[in-house]
Amino acid sequence: MRFIRAGVATTVAALLFCAPAFGAGGPVTREVIGVAEPDDALFASSVEESGTVYVLDTIEWAERVERDRSVWHEVEYDFGAQVGQVEPPATLAALYHDKVTGVTVDASLRFERLVSAGASTRGREIEVFVHTSYDTAAYELSPGALARFDAPTPQISGVEVSRELLEALHYDPAVYRLVEASWTGPARKEGDKAVREASYIVERVAEVQRAVYGGDVALPDVLVHDGIATYRAPTPTEVVTKSAAEVVETVVDDPASLVPWIMAGGVAATTALGAIVYWRRRRRRALDADDTSLEPGDAEMEGEDA
Image (cartoon, rainbow, N blue to C red; front, side, top):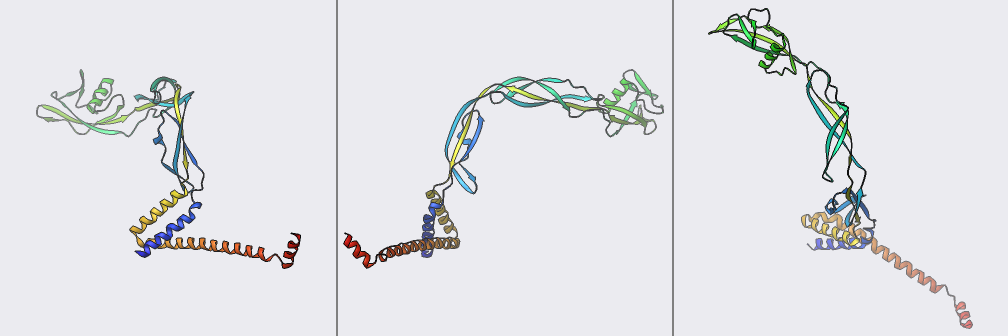
């Protein structure tokens, strides 16, 4: 423990001797521009620059009126499922809420692009549907429309027929169409009903299309605040105090870690002592040289002149 106490004392002494070398950097600043209200919490308590940690010193706020404000605003207009490319209007009226002032302003946005457009035919789907009827010869496709069980293929022609079939297959008639149909087997009897299974090929022919509109929206003038914070370099005393505290804390946790600090402190202390001895010797030699530069004859002549 005596060795540790001596080591800590040596290290702290070395830090105190070297203190003037620390904290020599000038101040640095950070800015916050255009906030609604002054808020010191927007600035960090310390910043690091070029390896030096600067601590917060002062914060100054200034208010100003920000004019000619604008913001780029984009919206999407959904045309829904469309067959073929839509023709979007050249402009679109929209509203924009300015969070700074809390005011909602009108905006006229121009057409920019279509996100998804054009007729398309995606991969076809095969769906199976079982037609049943108490009539052994025909089945009903739609109210008032009958189709025969013995037809070469199931009927899909006709707007109403196609719509009823697609809805029975759980497809949106505005987006899909029937391409082909065929029987998968012969008609048969199931109890009192005639049954025949049909296969339908369904194809998607519409895409959901969205148009993007954008433009600059003029915003009202607003009172804003600009802040500037000044950070100063730590003083020599702060640096030495912090370093000494870290040394002591490190020694408590791991006494062996003090060895490099002791060596560094010893080197610093030895260097300082050597510099002092060298300076004192040069000073003494200079004084001795001044004393011996006066010869005896010169002294007598000075006496006669006196």
